[in-house]
Image 1 (cartoon, rainbow, N blue to C red):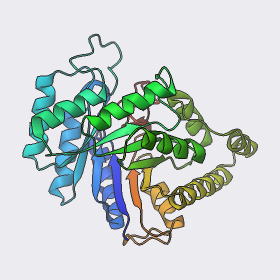
Image 2: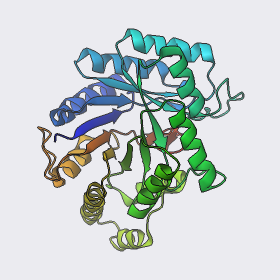
Image 3: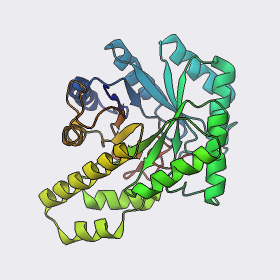
Image 4: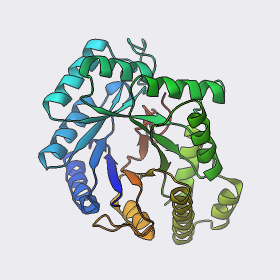
Length: 319
């Protein structure tokens, strides 16, 4: 069975960035993605750029799935955005809580992602397929694993169709999380998030910010390579490939790659897994969600952890 592939971008800020994005999109389009998703900055700070990017993707003949975060927003503003997307023919959204921009005051009329999902369903019915975020190693702001599971269940009960997880390198964390949610009656697909590794120092900063654990054996091995970037990339590729293989063998519905806004790491990891430009895979079937990321991990979880601005987007924390 041909795996489903989706790829995430962040909206470019310059004309040069827009040209680079088109080239990256065209290269990754050879993998036959089912849709391209586009991130949404903290407090809606990239709203116009996100919409422009989404419209361009759709105009090029691809399905687009904009991220939409609700913190700091009013119902009227979210209603307006949903109408814009509906008018543009958009059929998917990634619903996140997000984070307020630095210095912002009021939280707006939404507090959590489940409220955004519920509002979207009330306003638009089944117009959109809705993805939400999940945390196998638990949300860093959750009071307890039980509270985090309850928050996740509220999003699904509100109408989410599927979930994409924060990245992780501990297979057992994902398997335990899936077992836990199945026991409380959640049956939506839970796609594991995968972060390719090109730089250990960036991965370490990123992981410290979002709460993703780097196992001691991995950290020590990376440290032993010092400044040998080739060895670091090779080891990282091996680690991620083996994790993906084990996830698929354990029945994961697919894979979601955070590709850091570059075509290379995504293409290389997919090649190791036998996923070709024509969508064939040696591992057989499954759902592969590839996310193109901004050095800011932005996205999926509603805020954006930008290394250069300290805001939270994406990858990592949301609710």
